[in-house]
Image (cartoon, rainbow, N blue to C red; front, side, top):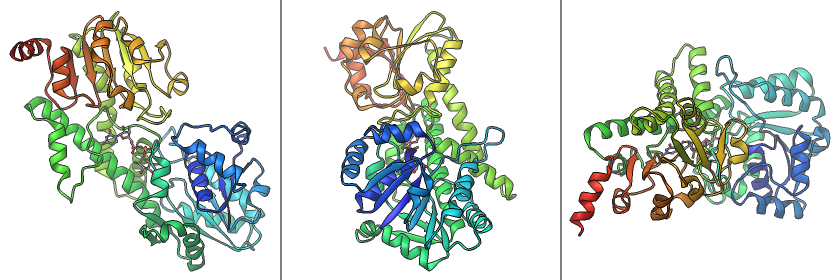
Length: 449
Ligand code: UGA
């Protein structure tokens, strides 16, 4: 079997490579010559754990190829996946579909035998039908069907998510297309992964509804965390006990600095737009968007408040810039809001992220970049954990404390326990849990003898 993947960005590269792992011949096509040259040279343009090994294995096996030539890339493909970007339009937050439609227009005249055109990018309801209309308009004789097949993988865990998904969603009215899609997903099919066959509109909405619901869950627990801070409750315990209710589930209930990344911010905005367009406002999602944006800014304010409202001349060390661990992606990361706000308030910023510096440097200026957490701590008046990279979970707190001007830790990912922090004598501010002040620590230490 042969398929083509148009777009070698995050989704295109990961899913193309994983399809090759399924034993399918895959050609990744991209207009960006640099990206294709990088891939042809055996390098990976993004950071995703395990992806380099799979790309190397599949290119060596001859199952995974890359090209900038669309005609060559789609020749003989039984299915052509469109996995190009759908960024938010700056003016209105609506998903920009120009790359998707452009791809459809360019594929149309090149189609030969029966082909399934698959929209893999996250696209608004009605896009698959529009792709079909465009192809038919450009090439009325083409023998093809269109299917929507949204992707649910998470950055940093993309390969595992692709290989062991909770479900595969396929949206098409055509039985012939369903058959081709079943063959493509055969290895998952025989593993009894639920394959949900629906109409294209339903499939497109499943993707937005899923992402918006997860973003809502996070925003909900973030607001509960605020309430915990005012009432003395502990948000981690609240979330854990809530999650034990099978109807709620424990995942995506970690309170933090607000969601970021290339998907939730863009997809919630797009869903709100779709709702407005159809006269059915998605008011909960609209509220989630606003609450999340306020939350990211509020994180900077919390740091400023920890200094009694004035951070002028203070040195703040930031640990973690990526929007989540195991990625170098900084799109819509809380750090991109927090760092500039602290700088505006007069703070000097030192920072370290295991992978994201190169991406971050495109957005953040005047940051003193370091190559580890201990150099960030040197002379710092506070350390702020913004991303829960594993290497931040077991920091030598005594060493950090010695290097810092004063022992102040703002843990916006709740990766330390109160007990650990108390034992080390830090001023500690976390999310939705009691604040720890040094006086409490010395009392605690005295009590402990
Ligand atoms: C998300 C979805 O989880 C995927 O299912 C989907 O395929 C993907 O978007 C997409 O549409 O392409 P991703 O953005 O890679 O995946 O990352 P997540 O793990 O979902 O995290 C998103 C944001 O939420 C991060 O900023 C993360 O720190 C935050 N988050 C997540 C929390 O603050 N609390 C949580 O409990 C979980």
